[in-house]
Length: 302
Image (tube, rainbow, N blue to C red; front, side, top):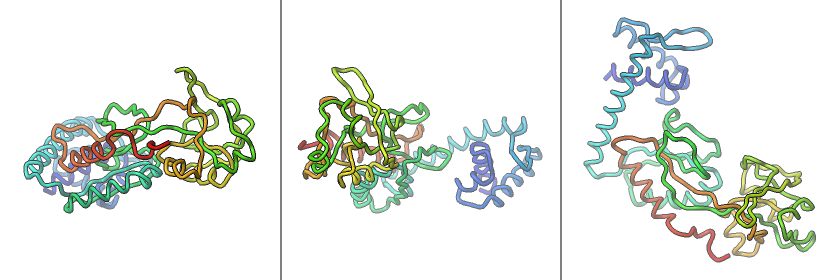
């Protein structure tokens, strides 16, 4: 077991590039990480890593050893998951990451229901708009919004969300209602900086994509904050409908330019591939797929 612990640490160091990051991934100290790798080198009688004050790099032997031992550890982990899955019990720690706004508004109630369904499951959930590396940071799965380009992950679509421009009735009564996207140039706009093109808002007319440059004095990195500012009458914002669906239904916000709305964005769950998918991950994916199946509740009734 001590040898396997050392080998796992060596793989983590190779994949993260530092003892500190490897230690963080495996839940120990950087000093212990260094000791484990040194112990492995002593057991093998070879140097696996070149160490300098600034960087780590594998020796030729170290690189070859990493490529072989990583496959063996992956196979051992897959075997362990296969045995656990045969028990049919959903248990253990499930580490999940999800975007902040969607996570707190829509995903959290679903996860509460999941926890109630599987009382032996431990949920460790991080709500953050930072794009994390699932493997490097030890996450089992991620909920992500928008098209995904990471071919190393398995992707399953859950649902879609509209992207909608909204404003408070009081703002529109004072400043008028835009009829076309180009009219936004004369309005106060509230920018969600999570969008790739912050001040170039996307729209669509007769099936063709278009964008409009907006002016703003409010740049906020959270869609809920943008919606709150719009609700206070400070201007028009463009945000996902899962953030403002309830406010639209209640009349607190008014949807604008719907016939020019850009294509909806997919909401997906992503997880690393494996020959034996952990039962806890399969349970999560299947539960969320059923929970969000069909037209989302936040898009109904308006």
